[in-house]
Length: 451
Ligand code: NDP
Image (cartoon, rainbow, N blue to C red; front, side):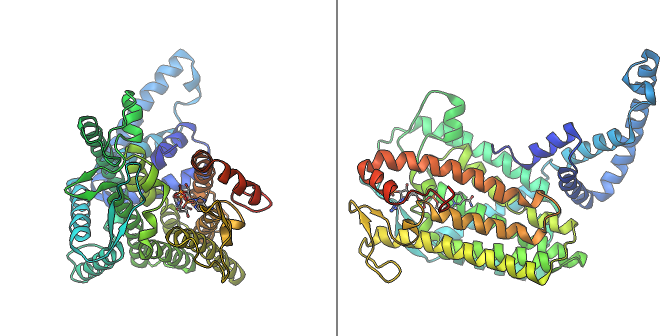
């Protein structure tokens, strides 16, 4: 499922039909050209010569054989597509610069996460009764880094547009890092003799499965909880990509209402995430998933590089929004935020104090364990509904001329439906008749009266 944008582009290359994917690819291609304009120019013309002559040869051979090339050889479009693919692949090769950017970024996050002050939150109680502790200083780390980079950009030590110009390199460097780090996690997990819940190895014996889903629940490196670290890196990465895209649009003089709306919504969402970072400690990923390639790739590559597609798309496409569209877009964002944050907060408060009032009233509790008031009395996963509305609001600024900017809400819809099913099965097993009663009282999964 998570083969990523690159795989999509390759599919388009092969099929060579769909314009909207081609437009994404064209954006990426143009972006590659900016990065390596000088070298690419020479390489492209060299490649074009090679292609032209090889195509000529092929055309001649085919004509001689009376085959499918008999009507004048390969088309210009085929040639261009070959060139695009070559250039795209070339732009994916990480340079030492992109490795350095990643290294400095991870290094900063490790140091800032360890030394900056922050609320220390106890995680969920694990099977063996132990609890991990998380220092929630993500917001401070983020603001400090934004400040440092801002000063660096002013002093022209760092370039604000570096990510938007080296996006593909950074994507592949992060991908390679994810593969390497999860191989190390696999080896460390297999060698672990720990009997505690967080480090006990879960080995199926199937190498691919163990590497994909991970072996340990909460592996650590230099006392850093890697799972918490990678989510933080991915969410911040998303913001930094956006900020770099914003800087690029200012530099190019293309900043418009759509870009401002997209940037504002995403920034609010990401800042909100870090403001409430402690809520992350009780989510499914932290509590239930082991740390393998699926999670590391999802956090480091998928979140930052695919959730920001709208921004990349807006760099290349001009959208004019009517006032009514802007108002409707803001409305969807605000409603989504209210439901998303409200539902997650209600559950978090309920777990801390099952008597805490919900919407000013005593909560309705089933079997002393499950909340059936507020948003949790409307649908069993109202928080997913809010998240989906938010995701939609990030794409609406792009208008409806192309489905490319709707990648994130479509992906999230599929993910959350799948996730809800898995969570449902987990809760049915954990809470048994209490869950059955909850299902009876609250029959809707995500969207009341629909699903
Ligand atoms: P939830 O926060 O909904 O957590 C599910 C867990 O909550 C259950 O396993 C159960 O755990 C507990 N629970 C369920 N129902 C009740 C209830 N009625 N009363 C009390 N406890 C209940 O799921 P996630 O961790 O999947 O998602 C957290 C947030 O992250 C969501 O808002 C989601 O939209 C968002 N998210 C975003 C993604 C993205 O890519 N943008 C991806 C995934 C999630 P327990 O056993 O502890 O009781």
